[in-house]
Length: 386
Image (cartoon, helix red, strand yellow):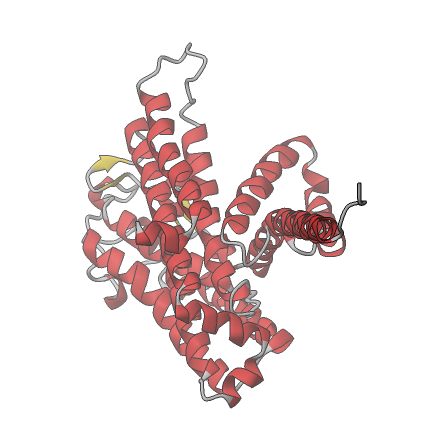
């Protein structure tokens, strides 16, 4: 009960909707016949699962941008690293079923005449090890990057440029064939996960449900962090970092905590994304991908918790529709949407609604106060003598 009041009704409503989707969508896909009006086609399940992963990625950005004021243009790097960690596990599960039939080396290594498996691929035949790397690798990169950046007090546009340079450097590195990650083609042709065929409808439904559960847990986690004393300190760092430092706090540690947690969340989103789309390549490191995440958060409303989730779902649904109808104009639409939101809806969809609702409540309170004052004055004035 105390936790419910602490997080607020909005968080619990969002979590309830996400968990309902985790149950209803797989049931509508697996239990209902194809001719049923409520049947969800199998091709939509991984597509919606991809949207959910994007929502988790947008939420991870909102933790640092909306509540700490760190505009990261490199969150695609953490997303891609988590995806590569899961992709390496999926590649090891192929075994002798690859094109070249090598039980140990992936096909691209056989093609490039690699003689043995690189040391950094060892252990990825175990699911628990892959899950550990999904958390550890993006989290470690976020921690190391944040430690040096925040200790040096790099802020504003300079920090944004550095984060974008980081993801671009990783893009160039992973494009190289000698890195051992598949080069330009990346990792693909996955067969199964935990022994289940990855193309099976039941597996895709399970991955969708897992993505929804991860998003629900992330919403609860971010809600708890932002509403705690630490969350208030994060907002103080965002709004007045110098004052926060002058009264004895160390803003760099607050930023480092938020940035590390955010990087881990983005890595988990990437790990859930890869088995549903069936491929991971260096294109996921592209700076434009990280910029799109910023657009999702801005459209939905940064610093609102629910806004980035809504923004990611709406923008990516629009992307699916408009890239099919007018693919040559999609990037112009995306840029125009960002400009529109910046100029007309700077608080985003949810932020604008909240602001309007607060304004209405202020007006009602002012009117009620005026009524109370006028009523009190009327009672104080004596009536005419009879």
